[in-house]
Length: 490
Image 1 (cartoon, rainbow, N blue to C red):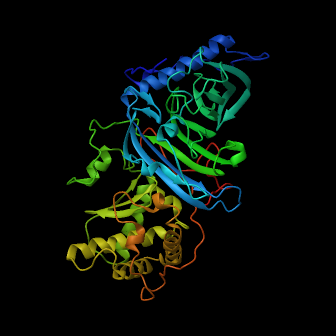
Image 2 (cartoon, rainbow, N blue to C red):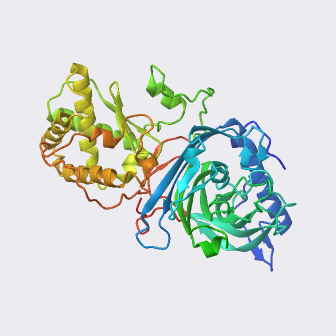
Image 3 (cartoon, rainbow, N blue to C red):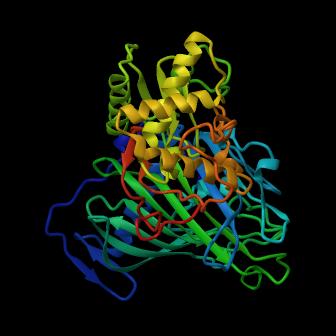
């Protein structure tokens, strides 16, 4: 089957069933709420296809960030990384060719073939395919139906606090390449899929269905992934986040594989609501960068995080008796680390918030941007001048935030030492990088020194994205992602 555009996702809700639903398990089938196994699986297939069809009006953004790590060692230090950001149009047709599927995605970042080559532990670069990461938010974008897949009931379970039925999913033809195999969690009210965990079946090198594989040399490879969904309205669940951590030796890959492999990363999708009608993704040449970023759904809808940042700014201004117009803070939803100011707005990225060694760094960085605004206003100093940092440190000290200075030194040291192995995480897309901003620091800047040695960066999972509204959440990433007990070094 092929996806078809329908008018609205919100209209695609199956009739809920009353409380007291009963479950009768049989060998490979299930009766639930008066539905036979065949009727229940039909609801699941139909609901998934209707959800995908309803995405035609949305044109959300998909962001993928992952790292190539040293395989087989506890430190899991990064070797290289990759970053993709695209706008997805589910109404576009697709065309398969020898190196993947064409269609769906319009790339803001990650379009060039060079950006899709990632260094491995033997020094070679393997090519990866962004279409595959889009597919890891779904079971099967084109062919999830009873003609292609078998669903087998396993047990009653939960996903988060939601009661669910757990099913295994297998292609009817096991040798069919690029088909999903794994498990799905189906909530018991409307029988919609809320979580997916699995991989895709191997594909022959000369087969045209290469849209989901991730190359290592010339060897096609699929990742195992864990994907969660968000209930954006009652009974309407949309893809939100996927996590993968693939660590294989060359013997596990293929006898002709050139090296071991360890890729780890995440995929976010957001912007279902209030899609922009414009297709122009050139964000560099506009008189109003704030408006453009909002229209492209790259800025988070202001919420509690922005309120907290604004409160820090007000405290710094008040402590330093600065009579300036109100300064607002906004958050880029993207992963690359950056902070800059436009007019009276300070913009910092979600990725920056997630790599801070301590939240006490935030006031120091905000004070630096405030100082930069003032220096720019009077045309006194370039952006990279140590004088800005001296002013920022003095301002934070008066505001009672001086405990953040040592952690700021640590952050800048981490970025400097590890930037070559995480170029896409460090490289800002809309502003000078923090490394550029920190250039010129010396012992003349009290307490702020870029050291030659620093521990690896940690990409925390505290700040995530509300995929419907585009606001920022403060929480732990679910479904096997980054948690307090499982924090990967980035």
